[in-house]
Length: 566
Image (cartoon, rainbow, N blue to C red; front, side, top):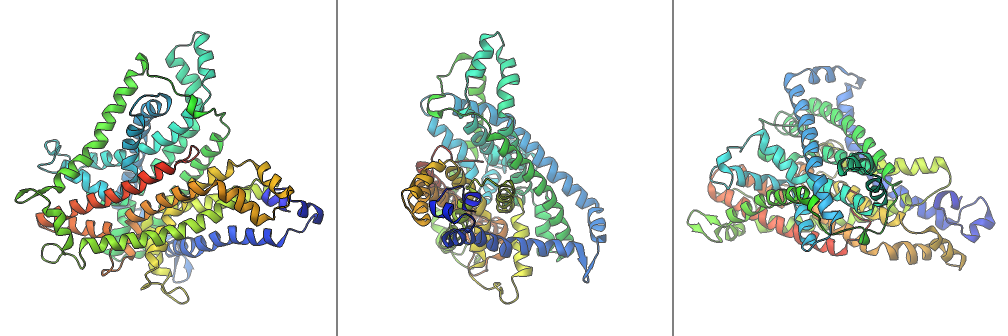
């Protein structure tokens, strides 16, 4: 049994034959039961309740709501807009990301690490900050204000590409970096030109990574709540923003649940594609990435040019944000930052911005602790390699369940919390733990994807050797698994903290007026009249971005080669 579950040949288990050791049973219960209970109560139940509101009316199955809501011209337009903008942004990210991945992961040159950091930086910024940065860049008087793109579909597309091109670069780049290049060299020796080598040798080997990256980008773009809400308003809404409007302004809960179900179906389909692509990618033969790079050649100039242009594009909104934060009605100065200690013009806020930042930090620490405990326990179980095909499928399904919060709308989760966690024993409506739990759900997939590749890379013979030498299972776990995964766990905690710090979708539903987080305060300041409030929003965005970047910079120092699965 131990072999089937853990893949480790412990001598005690071998002698017993069929009965697992009590410690193994406890490990399985804690490792699988705790994450399943957490996801079941705080994800499946709220989302299931949302689904039920769309499927049932007065206790009876009633699908007429789907026909009614999906037949509305506005609904059809929003679904089409959501899919088209996500598909178009994914295609652009792939087209731009491939040459950048080649330059940053196949070539070796000075300044490469700095360029990688610049490309990855937008991905870790909170969505509200990205939205504010593009409004600052494109509005009248901004660096690109003459293009008149503020409030247009093109502005949303630019922001989505800015936000997600790093996913393609990172996912495809790490795969490309480890590919054995001898097949390309052999093709060239046999007379194939660069284009033919690319299409017949390199591209097929990168296809699973490209498919996986495109799937993830599609998910992020179709659920980009903060960016679309700030840049598009009600004119260019998506399914996500429509759910928000239906619940908060029109109280049309049934229509909101129908849209949530529609979004869930699309998300599950895309996640299946991504999971299949990840499985295919593991079959690729890899080499030492430290020795796979080469110096740039003349033929690399087109890719280098694309990389530099995109890097300039990525830096532009950040520069615009910094410059605008230093401009006040009286000229250049720190007035916007000094105003962060107030409640804004005409007492626009309940608490000062610095208080909201303190709330965000405390809540992010709580969310990180929750996500780390659940994610580490789940990763230890999923990383095992059972011999039974049934158990392997079960673990794959378990892994897929933990990935669902990645694609399901945070707005849906937040709304589901409100309609389910309002009765004993889970009456958490006024509880301060509600927001950390919601943020932990959003961060959980990232924690698992950071830790799991390291655990699966551990040679099983290390555990077998420790067991043969007499170490009990808990000591094998401590001295082998936890000892190796220490740095990735610290890195995962940094990622989870950054994600929780910038989370806006679920938090916008759940945060209390007297205890808002910084993204919620920024969004409120943007929507209020008065240049002083907008200036405060810009300064607060810079502060939030600065804290996030500092955390991610620390994470990068802890990064190991197998991290960064997406």
